[in-house]
Each structure stands twice: as structure tokens, then as C-alpha cells.
Length: 443
Image 1 (tube, rainbow, N blue to C red):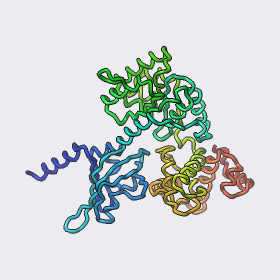
Image 2: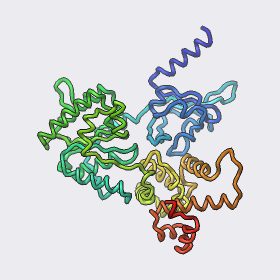
Image 3: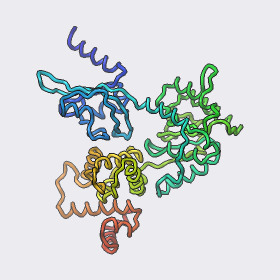
Image 4: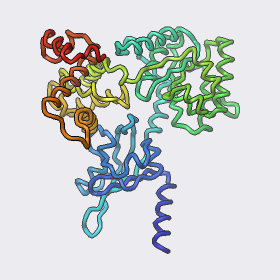
């Protein structure tokens, strides 16, 4: 067979097989990334092509199995790996990774990947049915006004049986809010059921939710207290139409023996409705009971509170005693956009605690490598504009000082005392610099 046809055939096999395949060159840059792998990791080829893995993913152990076999030149089979992609999505896989040699020289590595993310979600769904949730509103952390308003709305809605729509980016805490509402509701004595809608095909969703062939679905299961549908737009429009009919019917009957319904979506519901992903009438039905959770980048004043909370949690979980987090780390936190939101912050703290060994304080060197790389690059772009001549040193230092003072003020919600304490300077010194640079006017 002609070599070009044979290569085309190999490409087709890679694209059609239902197993993830990821190959890298000796430098760890992606050269093969098939369809199934893109589905598993929620990425596109252009997100990885010719990039090092560590530029795109954050690994709990700081080393991917692919890079490990490149380094050791030994295969790693049936290895569990948990990591987070650049979009904040957590991924769980089982990998077979092999170095590839040609004429005795290593030319790359290839990884065969099984996705266990969905399997874990299915198992979690079943566990949630039998587990009494202990999450309460008092466990929610944040002083941001928008976040506080979301908590206030959720508390009000918890006492009703009305369906609720929770809106927020991935990782903002929609499931946590749903748990809290269940905990404060009349059905708290029954199990909480989490349904990760994106994990199922449309036909599977229909069977689980509505039932088939005389078997009832979860909607009619009186043994369930609350059902949280994680990503409403995963339902097809016909299934959304059925949901709308049931919601309207239940709003009239007010039957408290049936499960309470809470829906979540990562998408802007107005855009989703305009784009045909969300049935407009269903959105209108739920809009009056909608709760919006702000992205973490829009509530940066809450980052220190959350980070301290997670530090305490992982100290207890991992049996360590890291006492504090350095101001340098909080400085990086205030510069970061947090695409993975609270979930990503929690992961960063967990990774840092694991890296801290016997240290009493989390410093910048304990942070995950991808997080450090991205925050440093952003700071560099703000202070040094590529393609232009470097500024005089005094001008550069003035810009850096202004930038850092603005970040510190924003971090402490413009509280002069707290900002001065965090910067280890007097209030008078800080106020002088605020007046000198006109920072209050700029804000």
C-alpha cells in the first residue's frame, strides 16, 4: 500500500478508537492527540500542539506519567493520575505510558488513556443517594457583596419546594450551594442526589430522569429529598420541554413527597437561550428563582479567607501543621484570573501543602509550577511590553510600585489599616503614597 494512504489509515484509526492516545516528542511537546483524548480532557488540538504538557496541565504530583517515562525511559502501566486542565476542569485517568525508541535513541513517549472521570461521577451519584449531606450555609466563606447576596437568596429559597436555577462558572460552588439548600430544607432527612448531566448521552439521561418501560425515574422517586442537575443545558430541547411540563405541574400540586429540583448551569442562561441550548420558556419558568454565584476573579477579596480555610482543611486531612501563607503568595493570588474558580484555588492550596514538607509557611516555591508560570507571565506582560524599548529603571520601579499598591488595596477592599499591615508599612507612609500616585482617584 502507498505510504501516504497507510499514514491516512493510521490517522483514521487513531481518531475512531474509543481510547485516548497522547504522544509527545523528547522535549515533552504534544505531537499526537486523538479525538477521544480531546473528549477526556476537554481540550482541542490547538490547545496542546507543540506545547509542553506542564504548560497546559497541573498535576497533583507535579509530574505527568508521560514526562516520567521520558525521564526514566521505563514504561509506567496501569497508573492512576489526577490533574486539572488549563480551563479548570479536573480529570481522572488510568494510563499506560511507554517510551518510544528508534535506533537505540528515545524519540518520544506515548500514552494510552482510560477515562475514569465519568465512572467516578456515576459512583458518586449512587453514593450521594445514601449519604446525608452535612454542608450548611455557615460553611460558606466570603464577604463579597455579590456572593453574600447569592447566599441570602439561597437561604430564602431553601425553605420552599420551588425549583431553583443556580448560575455560575465551573468551580464556583454550585453543587455546594445545592447541598446547603438541601441541608436547610424540609426534605433534609432524605438523601441528596447529584446528577452530572454531561456524563450521559441524551437517551441515558432520559432513562435516569424520566424512567422507561414502566420503571420510574429519579423524578418520581419519593426516597430522594433533593436532585441537583449539574448542567441543565446537557438536556436536549425535547427533554427540557418535558422538564418544563413537570415543573409547571408540580408548582400547582406542591407535592412534598417528590424530590425537590435544583438545576445548575455554567452558561449565561440568556446567551444559552438565544443560542438554542436552553429552552426559553424553561428559563423564564426558573428565572424568578435564579441564584448567580460570581466568579472568583470578581471576588478577589475573598481569596485570603478561602485560602486560609483550605489550608486548615488540608492541615487536618494530611496531618501537617503549615501555619500561614506568605504575603508573596497572596500577591500572586491577587494577580491571577482563577479560570477554575474556587475549585482551582482549593487544588492550588492542596498541592502547595503537599509540596511544603516540614515548612511552617506556604511560599511561592511551594505553589504548583503551572500556577507560578502563569502568574509570573501575567505580571511580566503588565510591566514589560514586548517589542518596545525598556523603560528607564526609575519609571519601571514607579509602575511596579503603583501596580503592587493597587493590588494590595484591592485585596483588602481599600482598608488602609489592613493594607498597611500586610505591606509592613505605617498608615502614614501608605496614605502618602496613595496621595502621591492618585490611587484613590484611579479607583
